Length: 457
Image 1 (cartoon, rainbow, N blue to C red):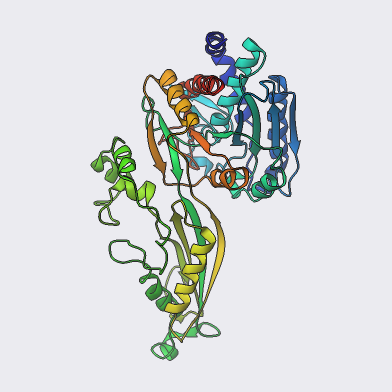
Image 2 (tube, helix red, strand yellow; image 1 turned 120 degrees about the vertical axis):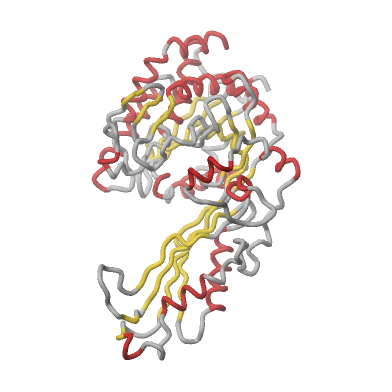
């Protein structure tokens, strides 16, 4: 069975790629109201694909926002594990169009790269598993393990409907392990498994001084400028090395284990190349941690935007009534976004001089997650990558966030295998997004090996 499913996938690579192009042609941009019909069209297209490859059940389920696709194929029986495959069919807006070398919704292959919005994030990576399941159906009649699929249409806008859906359908989604392909490997010949993700707490700060804007020549020096006050408060959020000074911020931060530091040290890294890519002359951050550790495994605080007063061309001598800042904090596992947002709000209020008032609004957040590195499912993923790529993957942490991993842990009690096939230069969320065609096909082979390995546990 295993050899024929692999052979089928190799023999149908052109068909698989053509079908992926058809999926990518649908402009399923979740954040833009004019694409609401396209969101429905993409969900229905994918549901029909799942039914066509043999899923006995696949349906488009409504939410308060964009619909969720749920599918199940439980032919393997109760003695075999159940895998919950997650992905998303929505994509980022393609603008600015003028920076694309090819139209974003006209998938184009140039060399080994398939250019299109959603090619890597996440339609192409999700479609890897759809085509692997087709290969099982065509050669063995069904996959060797039980499959459930949960595919949402709001990942690019913060997944507002996802947690309520999972909470409401816990029995329906019950599984032994989750599988997500929405990340990247370090290189075409350097497979990677992410075992930890950072979370996020994101707040907006509003500082108010006088009741209205004032003439700086008349009131300056006697009325505290809210922008000046805000800048002074922000300056007290971190020390000169980047260590965060909010009381209690580090209370639940796990220290990196020596084994983790040794694994992260295996990641190929050229400091000079990294500096050039970032466009800076030197790195900055917490002493005692490498650049990789700072960007993957340590919490951060960044001011993402600051504004107030007059910002148009020319001069206007105004003393503004208000000043604003948006601040994000990347969190590591065990840090809770709600708690961190509360701590920064309390700290801002403690820092605020009596001359101004401060309001801190919690905009959104998501928990980080860490999964077992020694589980049987992780071992099955290691063997799958080695079979498809010719070498075992490196274990890494990810500096970004995939909040659904923590949601699966909390609500379903399962860990996730993060099996990515993108590359670091795939231009996610940017013009000229791409996916390596070779990675797409090797991804199908990896998925076939992984599901076969799980069946043999």
